Length: 517
Image (cartoon, rainbow, N blue to C red; front, side, top):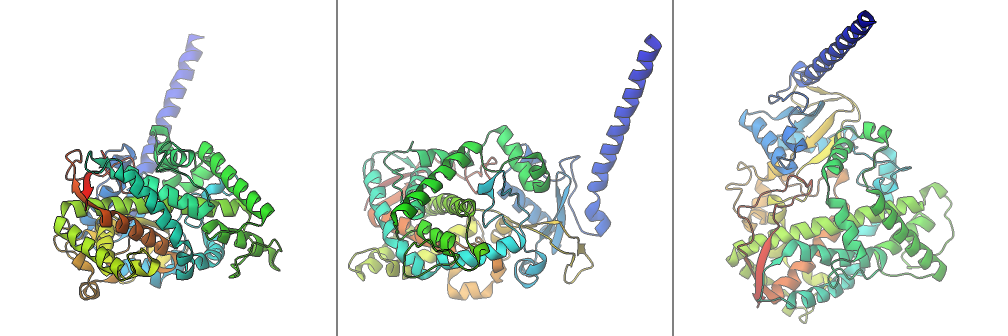
């Protein structure tokens, strides 16, 4: 018996050691992928590749992106390869190669390679994540929802939310510093809730309301949530097979209920409003937008062109997330830089006063379009702090990199280093300095256009770019017209990026003092 037990134990140990040997060999072989291709790559750490600090939350995606970019740039390479765990990822460094990926040879890089699951995680199947024909068809449907005419239609709603922002800001003006990101997140929640659903979220009045609570749930991750997020990002195919979900079930349940209740109420009562949900309902019931504003329920000739209720909910969801987070993030960093540079703040404030004076002191859509210095200030903010520090693509068919012998195989991940490009001293001398004049027409014309891509570029450029800029201009106009800002001692300077957040965010928040103008 003892002999049999010893034999079994010995066989088990041998089997285990064999498995370990095969696993170690496979990992090392995986981490030699780019070397075998002849592409320059940094030294790796076993198993983690180059992403250990991301996985252990010691480093943000933004800092990681800049590190990889600068490593390749310092070795005078136009591109390079790195590894997230065992997954090889290609990084174009030369702006011209970035242009090839995003524009010239877009047909090789149509997809983002992101996780989505229409059946078990319907809110994940939105325009940002979809690929192939599904993305193309939906993009065509959605594009008319963001024309200048549609933006004007929604503008008054934004201004009304701005009035409530002033009411809340006035409660503590001159008395205490505020976490400006928290205030602006509540502001954008109210805007998106009203514009997307026609619902008064009252986040400014009541920070603990349902919408604000559930939106924060999406961005507040525990250790296990981060592991799931990393798996869905690095290996979406495996995540789908494992049944993992990108959207937390409580949030998904809440959001689907809100969408269905809103759709049912509007259709039963033939209600239409000047908002995003009205446009989605037209796509649901007609497959196209109709300028007369009605919500009729006749189905178009091509039933496949109509949005299903799940597709409608997914688009409303990504619109909510993008509008809630990216605009509040941009405004937060913008106000931090204005508070740190009082002369720029005052120059922008004077522009706001002068433009409003020409429009009977009313904030209108046309007035925001005339605030050209504000546009420079926002663009300089987006240069230093793009909401998403890098953009991902996946190679959809084998691609030979121009000017090289490197062949990128189908299904290879591509990481476009937005933050690396935008903080490169070659393109932006003294990149840490906040200088809106970098975006004068003369200076812009001297730079490669693909060194500034905070919203992406090419056919997959952010579809909500206009709305995001409009929302940001409205918020800044209202705040600068009424208050002067300075940096509070509660803010840690220099700012440190939060390693737990994929979106550009700071540890400890950004606290500002403010007084009435």
